[in-house]
Amino acid sequence: MRYRVVFRERTDAEGRATERPSEYLDAQLSDGVVLDASMVERDQPAGLHTESMDEDDSFLSVQIEAWDYDVADDRKDDFIAALRNSEVVVEYEELGDEDSDSVSAV
Image (cartoon, rainbow, N blue to C red; front, side, top):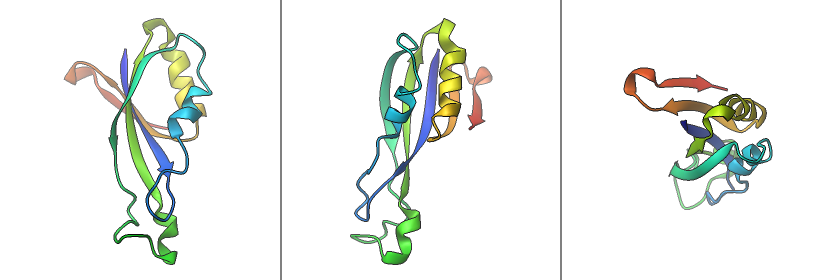
């Protein structure tokens, strides 16, 4: 099974990541659940409208990062439980036939 997972990622005033959200998910997973993972997209924080964020923009220092995960078919339930426990997953969807895709918010 293949999943697209969207994480929230905090950044500093210059828009550099201050955490690695995928590591929070990794900490929740047992060996053999994920077969492969790759980052597919990263948005800039909404507050980064100039070279650096203003003092009032610090609450906007969050960006979105999307990863694709190949998950062992028999470990799907373990993967979804880890997504829900990670506290950094915004949403996820199973990739496959267009008719069977489903998006879930965490």
